[in-house]
Image 1 (spheres, rainbow, N blue to C red):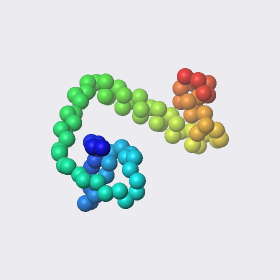
Image 2: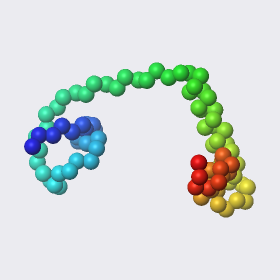
Image 3: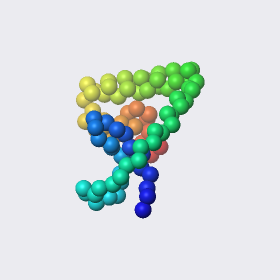
Image 4: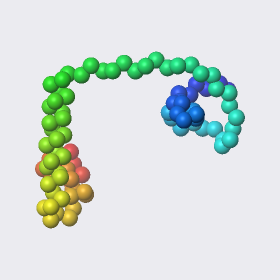
Length: 89
């Protein structure tokens, strides 16, 4: 059986990108072929700025709950961030 597996070479070891179903210590033969580099996606700069600003505001909002005395922030963070009932979106 021949199978192509994508891997990363790091510190002298080939590390598969995804889990490989092989018995432990199974010997295999590797054939090396470079993959094509991933082209960066051109992003809309304004959309990126809006996203970063929304994330910043959400972070600051939840960061402030640490000193609020609320004990259920980790469980009900959506409620405190977005005003949504817990478990619903």
